Amino acid sequence: MSDALPAVPVIQLFGVSKSYGVVAALDDVSLQVARGTLMLLTGASGAGKTTLLRTIFAAEQPDTGQVVIAGRNIARLRASSIPYLRRNVGVVFQDFRLLRDCSVWRNVALPLEIQGLPRKVVRERSQAVLGAVGLERAADTMAGALSGGEQQRVAIARALIAQPTIILADEPTGNLDPVWTLVVLSLLQEVARAGTTVIVATHDPLLIDRAADAQLVRLEAGRVVELRYPIDAPVDEAVDEVDELGDEALGAVQALPSPDGSAGGAPAAPWLAAVPSP
Amino acid sequence: MRRWLYYGQQALRAMRRSALVQLAAITAMAVTMLLIGLAALGSHNVDRLTRRWGRGTQLIAFLRPGAAAPAVEGLARLLASRPEVTLVQRITPELAYQRLRAVLGPRSNLLAGVEADFFPASLELRLREGLGPALVPLLALLEASPVVERVEHLGHWAARLGRLAQLLRGVAVLTALLVGLACIYLAASTIRLGVYSRREEIAIQLLLGATRGFIRGPLLIEGALQGLTGGALALAALYAVFRWGAPRVAAVLGALPGGGELSFIGPTAIVAGLLAAVTVGLIGSGLALGRGAGV
Image (cartoon, one colour):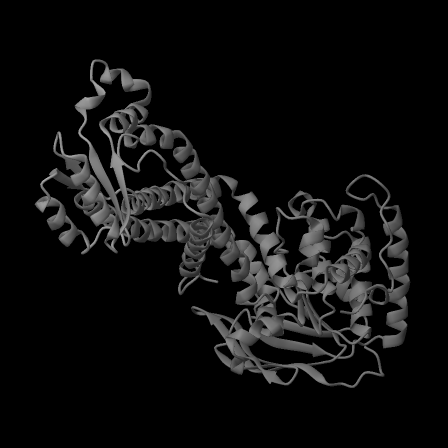
């Protein structure tokens, strides 16, 4: 996290509980996540990671407790305001939630189309963000025809494209090889350093090991059982290490074949600089 | 405007993706709308015929055989001087014969052996304000004249035709209502089917921050496009039916005074029909997207 950024809490959870029948998915969870934070949410399957993320972008209503996003209690938002909240939250879904019979380009461009941005801006930003995840040559491929890892990268690109205030990523590296895991981590770190609050639900040991600048929250049966901030390693050193790995990964990406068989392009780095603002 | 163009593109894209369902719905709508068109076309032509009868020769006074020419001339002058009469025309037996030959056309051989003087001489009258109250005193005058044998007028038939036109208009309105409801139901069902088949896509869009307007816009346009396409197809089919049927009906009506010519519905009615079809589609999709639609 950048020292220059004020520690404004962007996400606040106060005693949030959520049950499905008799199963407690979240049990009295309280958290504050500052602007520009990269938070790793870990825990075994069924620990409540996904439910926590879904609660933050108002896909789930907590049974008790309050969720405050950028100072606004989302339980008090009108239903018509929820879409505008979601436009500020980029989500990488565990099951990707892609439009399988639509092109990669259309999937990635969808958040901007929803916001009604001009076609030129949509095109430029789509190209930039697809470059960042090494899929610019697959733009016209149907999403359903891609491999699991490629679909995951499409989902990541879609979450990034609108430059949201918050990014929630549910197992974003679950289908990625180690190289792409590091590239994605580097990307998320860069986004967080630029001021976006990033929460990553993961039990990928590589990700947890390499994300030295991340705040770590461990859930167990819906309860926060561990909260580490900052991680023990000196942050600057850790960031440099990850950046180095990221650079190596980017180099490796250039040698990776694209879905059309040609040589893949390197992700745009830093990708944000290449993305025009709306 | 950009947003609505986007909605239009999305609607067309969705329609392409469910081409078979769309084709079935639009065809069914076109067939049902064709029923309204047929009723409207019938009403339009009967109306037209009634008006033509009202404008043409409205009254015929058949003269007694051997009626004295000065007496007939005097009666013609008297009639021409009346304000409600616009034209008095003397029809000789020869002229009546020639007219009938012309009306019968290729079937004029039916008149073989019939002499021209078989037909009675007559006076044909055209009235200023169509067939109406002015007819009564005029009929009394003619029936009292010693040179007039009998009087025939189209008032009776025109009134019948007027009632038929009124009935057809009623049928057209009733058909329009029933067919309109059927079309609304068809559009609503297709849109519901579309919502169901695209529920995953809609769910994703909502998760990405789509407003209900963003989801509904393309579906509303889809309904309107269904209505418009159905209406246009119905219109094309109606024109085809008209082109095929008009000469046949005209041949039957040709023997009637003022008959023999049918016309297609005018441009105003065409535009109104298409607008109504679009409205029907919009109402259908609006109903489909009402409460409980999930969008």
